[in-house]
Image (cartoon, rainbow, N blue to C red):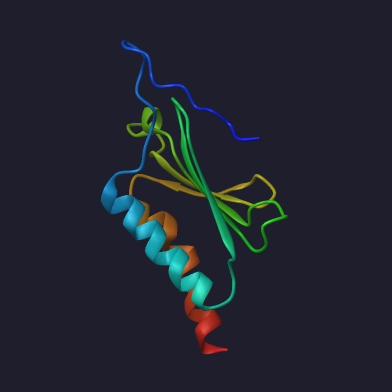
Length: 113
């Protein structure tokens, strides 16, 4: 059975989303990780306070990483966070490129081996 998502109501706060450039950077990394054979699937979730991109090794597991954007933390700790499979925050910051850097380094290591 499918899930029906209602249309947003007038006056309701907008959902947190990734901007086009942010989403393209995430999908670019995802495509390279798939080509390297490390990731197989992904999921996207956008709520009122958080937008998440989760990458999976296999579809039936917990996500290997979650890239999270919380706009309300943009002026404090930074809107972006990289969260591990076990729920530990690996990196948090204001720039998405800084958050994706550990994954980029891992990808370079995968290609070299």
